[in-house]
Every structure is written in C-alpha cells, then in structure tokens.
Length: 112
Image: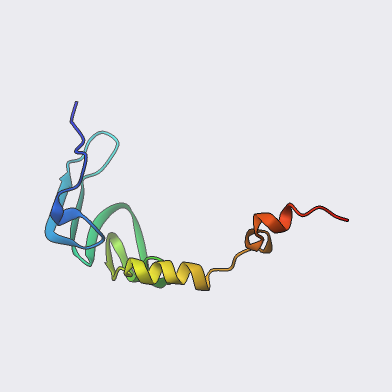
C-alpha cells in the first residue's frame, strides 16, 4: 500500500504551483489513457468525452478563470484571489438570510 504524505511539498502548496507537474495514466480495460499538466496558473488535461466550449467566470472566493474545452483536451487559466480579498467578499457581498443576522440575545428574549 502506498503511503500518503502528511503535507504537500513546498512547491505544491497553495493555488499556484511553482514547479510544473506532468502526469500520465496508461489505458486499462475500462479507461483510455489520460494525461495532465499543471504549472503556475495553467492547467491542461485530457478527457474521455468530447466537448467544445469556452467558459469565462469570476468566482467571488476563487477568482477569475477561463476554461476552453476542445474535443478531448481541456485547458484552464485561473488567477487565484488573495485570501484577504476572498474573506472580505464573503463578509460584504454574499447574501445572508435574516435568521443568520439575529444575535442569540434577540432570539432568547421573553415576551412580557
């Protein structure tokens, strides 16, 4: 059995990987061969199903990204959002239900 490391190495911590990573999985009875490549803000990988699409997104906590799917290959360019800005956007931009805004003292008051 393969041992899983307790912590990732320094070059794979966080959303941006400083050293490029390449991986390949050979085909077996149920899957075709797969490969992937990750470096800095770029990720490229293969897929088993064909797709053609272009997606541009701005996620409030993750940051902007562009994903291009061209047949059996997918490419994603992601710019991670700093954690301070993500925390600020969560506190100030997300909609919060009224029940979450009440303090415990408000809900425990007894009627007179």
